[in-house]
Length: 117
Image 1: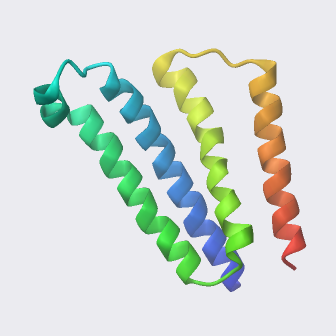
Image 2 (image 1 turned 180 degrees about the vertical axis):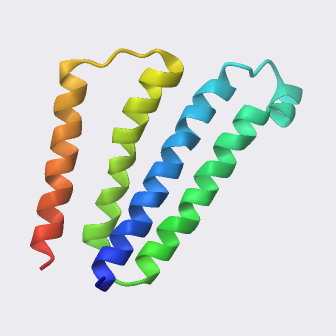
């Protein structure tokens, strides 16, 4: 596997993990009642932890090589996972505009990959 493919893989793993971070931040935000709840809110803490963990994967991806201008926009693919998790865990609706936006994100990421060759 070439360096770009390995880097893309790390970025995708980071995006996947980070999408769970967003969901847990949203869930945890619903439990905030004051300063004490900020410190004892395990959902919020898990969301922050998952975001930090996703940053480790992003660092691994950009360290391995590849152009940052190609790799960093791929972080937006996490919004695809977030759309799915929002439906499954939060009961949010899936609408045509949301699917269109996801399609545009995928198309943009694909164009960036092709443009780097």
